[in-house]
Amino acid sequence: MKSSDGPLRLGFIGGGTNSAVGYTHFLASRLDGLFDVVAGCFSKDPDVNAASADYFGIDSERCHPSSEALFESEDLDAICVLTPTPDHKSRVIAALRAGFDVICEKALGTSVSESQEIAKVQKETGRRLLVTFNYVGYPMVREARAMIRAGAIGTLQQIYCEMPQESFARSVSNPQSWRRSDYDIPCVSLDLGVHVVHMVDYLASGSACNLIAATENTFGNFAEVVDTVNVLASCGHNTLVNMMWGKAALGNSNGLKFRVFGDEGSLEWEQASPEHMRYCTKDGSIRTLQRGQEGLLEANSARYNRFKAGHPAGFVEAFANIYADFATTMRDGAGEEPIYDVSSAHKGLCLLHDIHQISQVM
Image 1 (tube, rainbow, N blue to C red):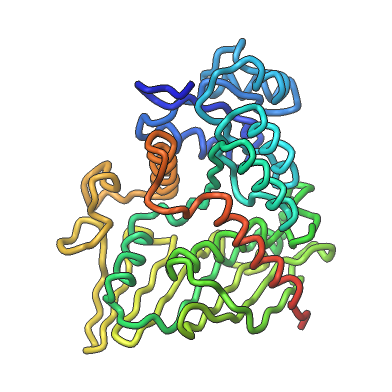
Image 2: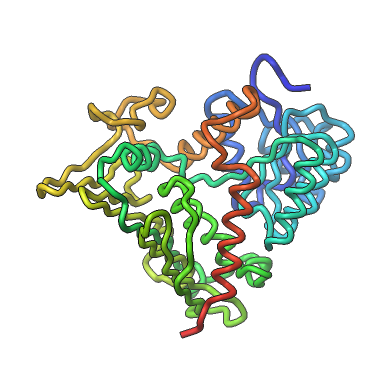
């Protein structure tokens, strides 16, 4: 039964101390007091599982040896699935069938068929399923979409979005084993491409992408997997879309960036400086927008200002904004719009599948 007072009760599957994402989810879910991580099966390794519970301050009796034991023993508001992506389908479906709402780390699955299976079970059970596309949690990203919708740059003509990383090209590269395999969709697209296509979908307010051309390449240290993807597409009323993501871009730890151009102005934002956005207009003026300035459409909302402007918010705060959206959805039955639901996640995987199908190797 859903908690009516106090934080929503959350249980983790995966996300232990050896996880790349677990601690971020732990911090973000609790930042605004909307969720409390109270139980979990944090790892298949008993030692890591116990150490993770201790690290997160979870009572030892609520640290379970398996997800099945977690389901049987706990009364929770949601299960958070933080296992490697190839394990998502089985864990998500099991949690849904056990009667839990589910929060799942991206990507929802490794293929279109997996997301279809998950969507079928979600519909059958009637439980909520939310997917963490965390980068749209940044206040200035939300400001960008609000400005585009309000016509601040006129008719949207071009979107450029990229996410270059260097992890597969560095001399010390040592990725997790599951990231050194490709699936129906290349792993680099499950890791990075899901964020890029979701960001484009977010900025374009859901306009469908029509693919024109795409390439997949391997430039890094691991010849067995694709590590770089470039895409040319269109969306909406002939808006040109350029997308790039990859793990062989030396000098980039996480270079997420977008530029959008309209017939009256443009916007430019990058995660390296998330509190600022460059706004140019047809008369030649160039402004740097930032949280706290007068006249912003979205970013000055109280929910995005945990502390006064001039004290930069970052990745964890953006992630916490996603969890705040989730809390609203879970308590009220609906969020602002379905930007994290199973249909959105499935839509992105369909596009990534199509990109893989048409890709050329240069």
